[in-house]
Length: 117
Length: 112
Image (tube, rainbow over all chains, first blue to last red; front, side, top):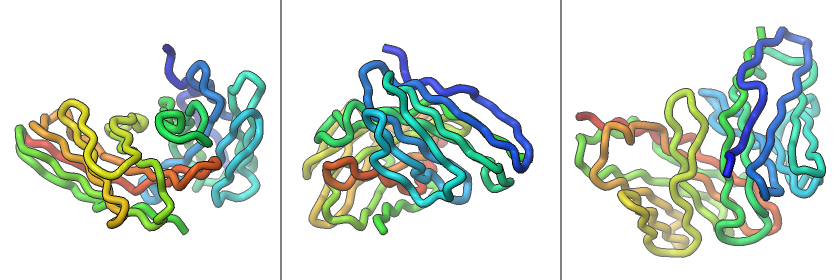
């Protein structure tokens, strides 16, 4: 079974631009979560989608947004990029985080390394 | 504010020794607990999940959970240099699409 895929793997943008990142979950997984990882802050939760609905949102400004499609693929968008947005953006999928046990195990994709100049 | 605390390390152990990694969490309602391994420049990889008090063993890895003490640990037996990585503890509080909260990780260094 193929794992979580993310595109692009690397991205260089300048301040003020916007960016869209894509994530395809493991086949059959209906939940996608997004995280930002930086050396100083560790893994920080951005948002979680299940069946095209945003279930949870982290403490990030409105410049960060996301969506999920009917095939469970997800995109996140960052508008008006700032230097501090440089980070590794990780997507993780799970079967159904609302259920107990192994259904809520999350598996990560390889990440998108975003550099803002 | 739900918090997950880990010693940042580095934890240095010789090859063949047992490495013990610890994690505490603040939300007493937490129900699912996970350990991830992250090599430098790579994404986190799930290595253990545990849901009830006690020990869970998988190969050289043993996860231990004590909900009363709000404590979860990971033991790595017969540590190998290839185990050198950052280990992330993650906790999910209850059902109902609660979020997964990560600790900042403990760096493990296994010397040959």
